[in-house]
Image (cartoon, rainbow, N blue to C red):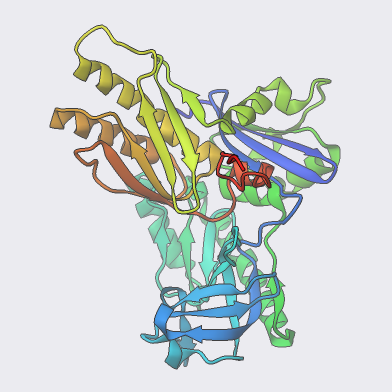
Length: 414
């Protein structure tokens, strides 16, 4: 897991658009950029109307009022019958065309695809997530086992009459009263959502996630952050007020930046964002990785470049691959790359060396909040993995497909 001796969050807002950066030991590790063309709808809850049921795909199309119809797969369908949670086996028997349905967006519309939705609703707070249709509570696996056990005992004592809660990583060392307060806030939110559902006509939104700055702070800010630096007076006031309510013990760590030099330039964030848009990323010893994103997957190629090493070829390749494993995870977080990812490490002859590279990769991934799944390294040096794809990455947010080459990177002779 990455060293987190010093963690900071930087917030800059200009012309109604906010950008947030998270640094660890002064190195940029995550960046969040508000969209100008289309805002994220992930987390929003809608009353939608089913436009088509597709038994052959075990899915249904749902009009939620945000452009292309959203896609609801059978695996994401949860129904409530007589107060009990039911997972239907066939979508054609559970849903009918023109039925109304309550669903939450789990994945933004991307390229030609509509949003992905679920009927398994959840409302996130700073310390926990409330799930009104679930009866299974839990505690974040990212917490130490002793702390998880403490929080399990607390959660049993504050369990809501209906639904369940998932205790978040931010609840580390949280007091009973803080967890109780967070739950009460979420239960009030759920009551409000239910009232809106009762009055809504599909398609309509009944719950909207907070705007970017508050959402990122809610989902990321923990007590190990040294400070939150904000360069906009109005945003500073709003963030400080939110933190004062949600986490009063660190309210004073929210500071107003008064420097003349732009905040992101002062702390090297602009330079880090520019680097995150390049295909080629250098490694400490002279090697490099090349990142290419296609519609189906992201391919990452590892090369030795100018690195020749001082010992055997196997030792040179091992060192280069180990450096690449660390850098790949940094880039996945920074660029927010999701979906299928294939990493082409340089071939190694020794099984113990391949195991060492995989161990390093998985160790680094342990510091990534986003869910990942890694497949074993093949004899060809290929690693297949998936990373949860929720919204557009930094490249898609800041750029658009070239109208001349249509994203191929080639212009053909006529």
